[in-house]
Amino acid sequence: MKKRIKVLMFGWEFPPLVTGGLGTSCYGLTRHLALNDVDTIFVLPKILEPMHHFFLEVVDGSSCLEGMNIKSAYKSKSDHEIYSHLAECITHDSLLEPYSSKERYTEIYDQLNNKTEFGKDIFEEVNRYAEMAKSIAMDRKFDLIHVHDWMSFEAGIIAKQLSGKPLVVHIHTTEYDRNAGRENREILAIEKRGFDAADKIIAVSNQMKEQVSRKYNIDKSKIEVVYNAIEKGDTVDLDHQIEFLNNKKVVFFLGRITSQKGPGVFLDAAEILLKERNDIIFIMAGDGDMAPYIIEECQKRELDDYFFFPGHLRSAEKEKLFAISDLYILPSLAEPFGITPVEVMSYDIPIIMTEGLGAHEIIPEALEFKFNDSVDLANKIIRVLDSSTEQKSITVNYGKNLDRLDWNISAQKVKSLYCHILGMTVER
Image (cartoon, rainbow, N blue to C red; front, side, top):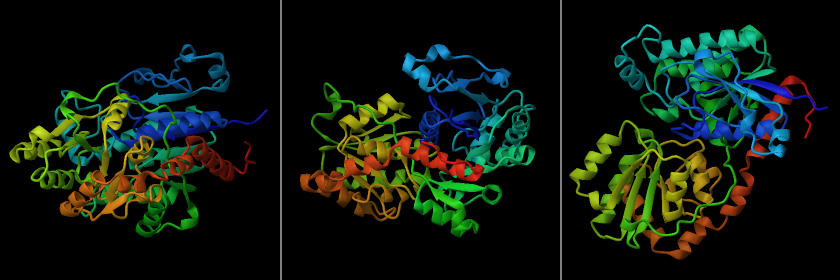
């Protein structure tokens, strides 16, 4: 009988509630680790909705150390056999939000009636989350610890100190990516402590590996690259076009509407094009701290008739957006990997992205433009929309690119890394 590895994993986002790519990545990874004889105890800062996944045991936050049997969620006997060894998802009441900032945390904290339970700022709350890790590390049996991004690093470090188990740090985005030019020194220090404490680091792209090595003075031999992926499935085909389209081309932005993601240059490029043409619809899907400003600017510039802001989209809504779209724009300042471009590839939608993004490693055919250069972006949007040859040159290798991005392949790489750390033979 194969020995199953048990992992204590700390994160801060998991479906069904996701605001970015991290939750989707954690879902795909843990699901396929379960298929490769790895059980995951997943720890979350909080839970906002019931979560039912037949490879995880979800535990209510009010009694976070007591299990809840969800075997009834198995869809078939074969699923039951595959996932016969359940793990847990332990939740902990917290004000930490995915991709939260110091300012956003303060805004939430100031609205509380009872503030005594939570940290006065985001760093106190991160430390409170880490303190909770003590009881889990002492009460649970596991082989190693796996953490995702800075808010879970301190919890992982404490769990390692108490248990003596090895620590794997998984880095999806750093403070240099999120707040380029205005980085928070305390967050940088936490990231550095996490990298130094780690037995191994997983980076989501070669670009991220280079950044961690250079910016944090980490030996490259300590860092392994494992790409994220998407769940393979059928694409959505709408029976009819949304009424407002009227055969117009659809160009879209999808992601957090924050400075890192470049929504301003998307709006500027749209304005340039709409002065000359009326056959394009622009959709900016997502939410974030810049959303009110972008919407107000759109109204001031009188672009309302050609611009739509649907807000944050769940999976089914995203698929409908993909099904009606002609072009995807990724105008980020930094994007170490990016789940959305991979999802977009499965719909054969051409992609234009900022120069030098990590996403270019997986989509080398994507057209690139200079960051914050709205004229360059506008010109390339027209170039793609008006040329079927240009469209095909971008999408021609999407199938091959997607074949390399498979959660089972990524999970096997992570399991191999676990086995190497634990001195175990890798079994398939």
